[in-house]
Amino acid sequence: MIGYLRAGDIPSKRHIAHYVGGQLLNEYCFTREGFDQPFSTLYLFNPPTGETSAEIYSEACGSKPAKRDNLPLRRRHFKSGLLLPSGDFITGRKILTFNEDLNYGLCHPLKSGEAFFANNDADELFFLFKGAMEMQSLFGKLSLTAGDYLIVPRSCPYRFNFASPPQLLFVEARNGLQVPPAFLNGAGQFKMDAPYSERSFKTPEWDGPLFEKESPTAIVRKRQGSFTKTLYKNNYFRMSGWDGNVYPCALNLKDILPKTGRTHLPPSSHLTFIGKGFAVMSFLPRLLDYDKEAVPCPFYHSSVNCDELLFYVSGQFTSRKTVGQGSISFHPSGIPHGPHPGAYKGSIGLKETREEAVMVDTFAPLTLTEESAVLEDPDYPNSWKEEVP
Ligand SMILES: [Fe+2]
Image (cartoon, rainbow, N blue to C red; front, side, top):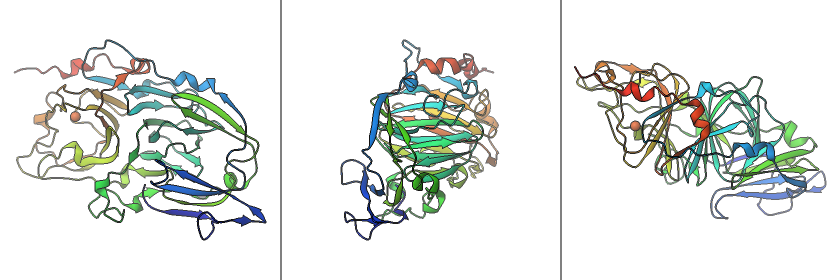
């Protein structure tokens, strides 16, 4: 997604014999959308087909969403801090809302978990709200810190290791996730005015313990919402090296360059990633609009074909009264919203904002789940009541 990488020992050409220590290695092509789109090629000591068992993983089946019906159409507020830690990074996922293109949820795992996970239904986007952890994957290890986005390509096995429980926001993108093509030039290089570049990303590093030691492994795979745990006699991940354009990568909010304008810029100017049916935007600390008559607060708006989910990360949220760090506002299609009462006028003259927030706009309508009801703030609609002078 962000360019070609290579690691370890690989042969000079694709599809030729590659011997290491006298052993012929197994060439494994990890492809996307058939064989014409980006792919990576790995050289494995053990065939990737060497499973000894494949069983339904009932511990994870509880993470299937149950939808809430007959809800009135209105603005909503969910407090992620109310979610009690549970399970691991597979079983601890709580889907708050979903549509045909994505699942959107939270994961506050209690423990790291030993099995690897591969989501065969979706590319995944994580946002690490709190904590620090290491990701181990088929392509290497990544050190993750608070404020990191993590992109995991569909079907890539990975797991998280952490010393203390992290808090994660996640999006499972059923129909793909990518950097906006408008950020790239004809050679696939990030343009000069893109909000980030190749240098901004963390990419996988060689994972000696995983790639070089022989030990049994387990991979839990999700397909059509069901989970299967597959056991391998030999180390699935043991390899000499890999190369290609498909691999996990991470980008921290602090490494994204926000756009500023003379007057207020629309949310689309803060675009970070796109998927089929949705867009991800990052609101970052920045100087505010510099026209002397500018109103820095967002204008009221009705995005008539978008449902909007906004996760508040840090800072003082001057446009919203009742939200705080870890809040998620849900503003469905066609319902006007913008600054809370009083915030619009109060923003005039402000020079900068320290807010950080992550927004997901979807084009297909979102369905809320029972998990969301536990986190919902019932007083949020009252916070929008305007006092008419
Ligand atoms: Fe909005």
